[in-house]
Image (cartoon, rainbow, N blue to C red; front, side, top):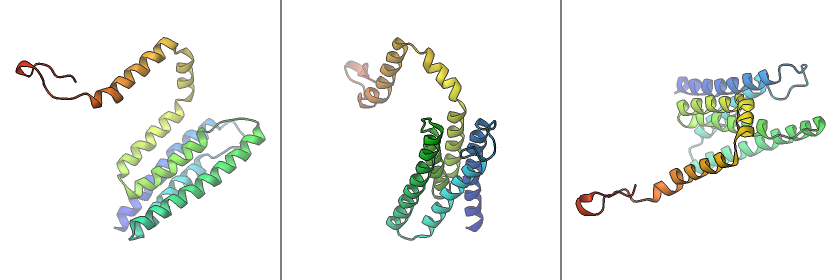
Length: 180
């Protein structure tokens, strides 16, 4: 049991390290002390989520575990958001990506301990890829035309909204018509 918990905490730490390297690389030109959350901070956020998840595991009551997870998340999110808010005021900039990434990382750290650690690791890789794709995604959105955007929205609506409610059974003579 202890070995499994250590492995799960290692996954939480690894997810934080991965995200932290991306965030630290992005801010590598800034002087020490002027950087926002980087490698160490994001690694600690992953560990914090994992530790809160581990503490929740020890509570026999699901309601109590849920309350611990919710309170831990809210306290962390509030403190980190306040820190970033003050930093952004000082820098006279706007942005929410670092705060959202930190909250997702915390949740992934907890999920690595409480849920499927492989899925949590995959979520960490996806989070890091999204963060690393900043410039490419901004260029893509800048080149996107109104017509392409409408077509993508229509395709997504048909795929994820209409298709699931269309009956998947055959009708008519010889069952030759299936609406889906």
